[in-house]
Amino acid sequence: MTYLDMRPLPREFYVQPTVEAARNLLGKVLVHRTEEGVIAGRIVETEAYLRDDPACHASRGMTRRNAAMFGEPGRAYVYFTYGAHHCLNAVTSAEGIGEAVLIRAVEPLEGVEIMKRNRGTDEPTNLASGPGKLSQAFGLNLRHNGLELTGGELFIVDDGFVPGEIATRTRIGIRLAADKPWRFYLAGNRFVSRK
Image (cartoon, rainbow, N blue to C red):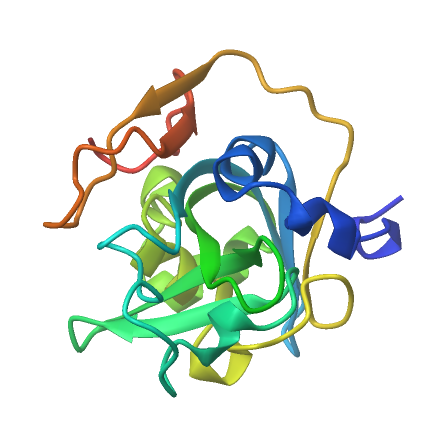
């Protein structure tokens, strides 16, 4: 059985509280069906962003940029940052709330050669060990913003992997609310972004 044969996580998965969703996405597999082939990676690091959180894009209300966050749970929210990087989020909580989980890093599983070409590196631990690297490796950009994660081109599956120890830390790469312990990763996994 390939990842394409697996049933994507249902919309109900994404309705759970965002911090729980961030923990529960660990170990799941992100899959992107591309013209070059299938790209897949095990999610090893996430961060939760809540509506009342000043670091959350939705904290000041809906804009054209963050509108996908206020849509149905189980959609992709992709944004462009620092004039250089795209970042992939899974929209969580109920429609109209404006919360999401940032997928910070994955462990490459399938389509590794495609990832290497997209990233311009042969180093496995440097392919998707950070949100910008991940989006580049998977070929994700603003075209993917708002896509359903419950089936189609971009989706997340549960292949039965059981995560070991999950580490909880404060989020990184932000200035506001940097003290929130809403970053989760698989302890000891070498594909996690640098601390």
